[in-house]
Length: 129
Image (tube, rainbow, N blue to C red):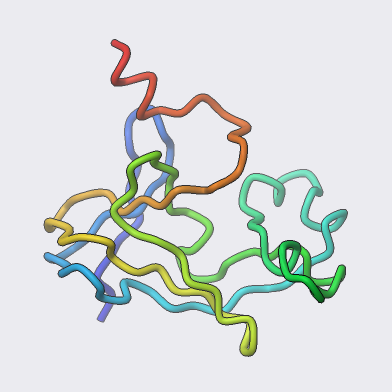
C-alpha cells in the first residue's frame, strides 16, 4: 500500500504528500530508474524530471549519467531543509526515498536536490513574504 499521493501544491505544481504518518528511517518509496546519457536527459519535456545518476561515480558509465525515476521519484519537490533523503541502488538501477524525521499524515515529502536550482525556491520565496 502506498504511503504517499501526488497532489497539486500552490506555488509548486505537483508534489508528493503522505497519506499516513511515516516514522524517521522508513523507506517511503523504492522504485526503478531509467538511466540516460546527459544529452538524452536534457530533451524538451524530460529535462525538468531528470536526476543525476552515475555522473558522480568515479567509474560511472556516461550512458547512465542521469536518470528518470519511475514511481513518484521525479515528482518530489526540493527543500533546503528536507524531511527525506535519496538513496541510490546502482547495482539494480533503483532509488529509495527515506524519511529523515517523523513525517505527519498530509505533510509534503521533500528532499534536497543538492544541485544549483534552475527555478525559484518556493520555500525561500514564501519565507520572504
